[in-house]
Length: 309
Length: 270
Image (cartoon, rainbow over all chains, first blue to last red; front, side, top):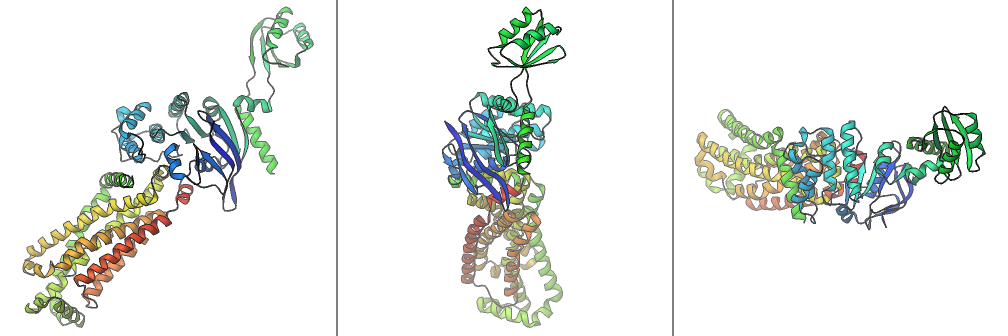
C-alpha cells in the first residue's frame, strides 16, 4: 500500500519551475532514493511532501494526509532531517531531543529520547553540549530528532553531505538499521553508491521525474545484461564453439575473458559453461558485468539536457 | 497542548538566554545602568541647574499640573517641588528597561534560529506559529518585567540613600503601582512582540532592531510629554494607557503571526 503518493506535483518560484508534474508512489516500508543534480528540485519536493511548502500545482498525500491541507496532522506523522543539523549548540544532546520531542503529545518523551540516544551511540555523551560535537555526531543527533516521535515516513535530505567518510558511514549504518526495521524512508542524495546500498528503488529527478525503478531495472533500461566468462586461456576453438551456440546473441574477446549476451542470462549459463569445458576451455569464473549506477544516472541526465536544448 | 508548547519554548529560551553571556549581561545589568544614569542626571540637574529650572516656563507649567494632581506638593518648598516633579518621571523611565532589553534580545530570537537552521527543524514539528512567537516573546518579556520591578525597588532604595527618602511618599503613589504592574507588562510584551515580529521578517538582527526601535520613541515621548507639563498622567490615564498598550500587544501578536511567512523562511534560509 502506498504511503506516499504524488499527483502532478509542481512548484514554481516566480518564473522558475523547480518541480514539474512529479507523479510517484512509495510503498510502506520502502526506502526510495531520490537522485538529481543540484537545483533539480529534490529539496523542494521533500519540503512539499513534508508540508513545509505548498505545491503550486498538483498535490501529495503522505500517510493519509494532504500535504497542503492537513499540515499539523502531517507534521505529527513525518520526520524530517534537513540539510543542516539545526541543533542548539548551547543545549545538551538530551535537552535538544527533549525539546523537539515535547511538541508531540502522543509520545513519552523521556523514554523516546533515551531510546534514540542509545541507537545513535550518543547515550554516554547525552549531557554534553552539542557545540562540542563533531559534524557526524550532530548529524546522527539530527537523525534521532527526526525519529524521536516514531514518524510513519522519514524524509532525509542529503544526510551524508559534507561528512567525512567515517561519519558518512556511521549515518549510512543508521539508515540501514532503520531500513531493517521496516521504516519508510525518502532519501535525497547525490551519492549514487549510497542510493544503491540503501534503497529499494531509485527516482531520478531533473525538475521532472526522469525514472523510477529498482537499480537493476534502471541498468537494464540502458544496458543489456552481459555475462563474463574468465578463462585460463582463450583459444580459437573455444571461440568457435561459443559463437555457434544458438542462445548466444553476441560475443567478444577481452583478454582471456569472453563477454557475452545471452538470450536468457540465467538459464543459459550452465549450457554455456558446459560447451566451453567440452571444447577444452578451463573456466576460472563466471560473473555478470556490473554497470555502475552512475552511468545510468548520467545517461538519464544527459538525455534530459538534450531534450531541453 | 498550546500551553505545553509555549512552556517548552519558554524553558528552552531561558536556558539559551542565560547561558549566553551577552544576553545575561544585558538583562541583569542594563536595568541598573538605566536607573543609575537617571538618578545621576536628576541629581546633577537638581544640584547645578535647580534654580534656573524653577524659573523656566516649561517646568512652571509641569509643576502647576503636578500640584493640581497632588495638592499636598504645594506645601513643599519650591526646590523640593521640582525634585518631586523630576522623581515622578521615574515610572516612565523604568519603561525603557523592557523596551531596551527587547531591542537587544528579542531581535535575535528568530534571526539566530534562521541562521543556525534550527528554525526549519522546528517548523517541521506540529508547533503553531502563534505558539512559537508568543513563547519567544514571553521568554524575554518575563525576565524584563521582573528586572523592571527589581529596578523600581533599587531606585527607591537609592532615592532614600541620597537623602530624598522623605519625598518618596509623593512618588510611590497609585500612578507608580499602575505603571509598574500594569503598564510595564503591557509595554514589555508589546516590545518583545515587535522585536520577534521584526526578527521573523528581517535578514539580520540589525534590521530587526530598527523595527524594535519603534517602541522606544513613544516611551521617550511619554517622558517628554509629562515633564514639560503637556499632559500629567493621572492613575486613570495610566490605566487607559495600559489597556491600549495591552490591546496593541495582542494586535501585534496577530500581525506577527500573519507576517511570519513559513515558506519564505524555509526557502530563503538554508
